Image (cartoon, rainbow, N blue to C red; front, side, top):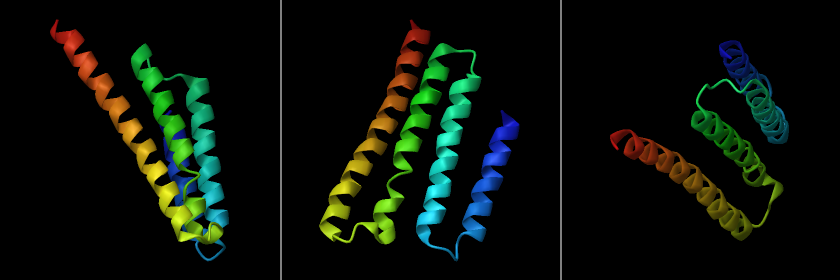
Length: 115
């Protein structure tokens, strides 16, 4: 798992450095496909012993994958600023759901441990 983490970080850096002069779509697409690969690897490996941690890791990976689509909106593919504004609020909502899901799991686990 650590090898995949390091490889993913290296490929992200390569994408940012070497595709920086190209169209932003190439850079965003490569990062999106890295996110998809991360989801697939984590679903396949199931690296956590705890069921709750495994489910939360998968949920977080799915949220990150969904959020990886949004940079396309800000790269100039959507010319209408009003549309970008509305899509941005949807992105903020997804981030809020991800945050609330993680906080709810932490709070529930702590309440269960106390009882």
